[in-house]
Length: 405
Image (cartoon, rainbow, N blue to C red; front, side, top):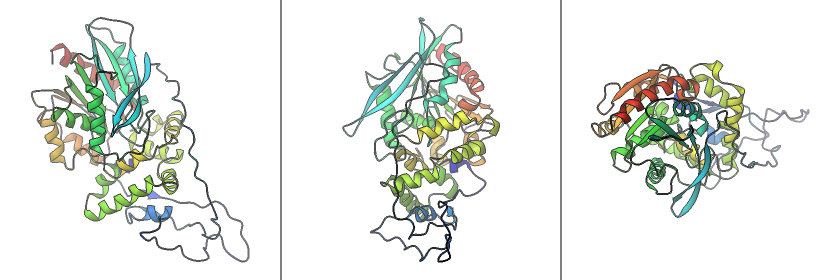
């Protein structure tokens, strides 16, 4: 689903059959008859579901012979425990978000250095992606809370519902659903950030930042400041292939296939849930320097894709349902609505893919943007270059909070 940033060309889905014994009667590469075309009454095959985007997405010509594919099993492994973080949080917990009368358990962790007076609160929300996780903010949080100065900080990192270590129910996820979660999180009296005393700084990456800006512009949340790190607004497929009616139809088909039982897991494993794919995407455009993509990072993200219900949010994100706006003009208008009311820091990156970079650059000098800076990195600078991001955030926090805003 990081195809959004692979600006150089269309994503390719390769389906490989398992090795088959050869015989004089048939060839393993030649099916005994062509696969039937899907009809409205039958689920498409994995190859057909991938190829519906053609020429945007293509499948290899190596197909599984139908007469040999007698049965298959789709396995959903138990949710793995959150790995022990390199920087241990002061506290971890679960908070219950309620949506459509359904309780959803949301994972969070707090980072704080000892006890101090005059503590200011920071909410950090991960960049929305297939492998979104609180882990991406841990080093930044640790750096900020351990600094010595007139102000002390407590950082709370919260996973999105359907992602990270939160529950992943089969909801009809879209930008409004995610906004509802953020609004409840900031306004509920029992939330992990309920004691912020009206001085909460919201820090988010990618779509998360833009959803926070949108909620603030509507007056649904009232942060004292917002930091948007590598902000984005267009999902992986829409930013590359657009939003024409024909493409929206194809996005809907792909989304439905990913959400379907059995075939959904099969397609998800092809597109997202494999270590080779995760490593390739991180090295090509998620990180700026491929050498920074370690086996530990790949393994950690791969484990996240194996959690029960892991495919529901990616199905929405990939096809644009989590996009908070539909155009650059609307994107800029979100920031303009906060002009004079909320301090806004925009952290752009030096090596973002060209389409994402263009949207970030459009915010330079834009109305409502208090400060615009640029750091090393691509789409996840808070994890790849955390100290550079922490430095910019700390300077911004010192200015915005000490001034009483």
